[in-house]
Length: 244
Image 1: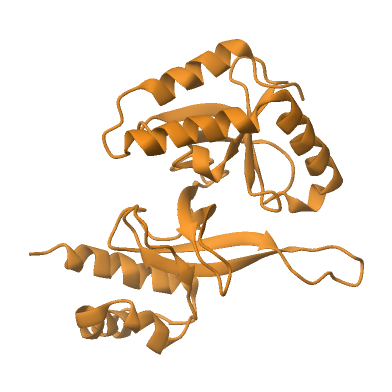
Image 2 (image 1 turned 120 degrees about the vertical axis):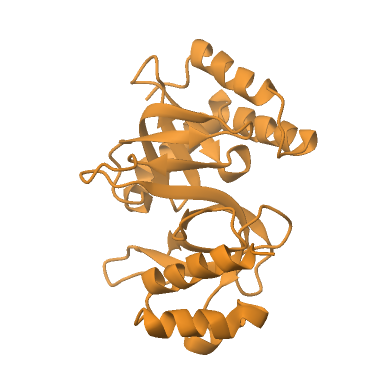
């Protein structure tokens, strides 16, 4: 794959330069710098070499999938193909003008991205957003996470964070594993944190509305150990939490 074309690069810089309502100018400027740094000739060569050496690090395989980019100015840019390398925490996108050219997007350069499209049963939509994440004693960092709740900006958000397993399997590989994360849905300084899928841990997220969520979960026969059911509880909480 070649680097991004100058034409498409100009389009992307134009997107960054547009007025940004929900993002500070400093955040937008940092996103632009992160994108540019990831796509210098030296960085791009390093990323391509690393991806070639770690083919198992791609989420869902190394084939490009149709999707879209969500930029900091609120735009949704359709692209011919995307692939996400969870080992490098890096998104690679095909150029819309020259398909054999690609460009790289670290988590600090995008609001997020989508695989597939809504309503397509052959390629169901998978939503990934850039969020602050904190795991154990590790520091807070920005990562792409897969959103499980109906919206990604509600009071509560549930998501998967994918990364290579720390311990190798007998064949020497590090398979990708998902960590369930929960936290504030609004973009801010509070990170998402690992969530134990248990009744006590889940209900603790809902504060004074825990009893209301418990009643909903019981009525819907939801399981506190199933991420899909926890997401439904959060969707219910997000609806009632905004009621004055």
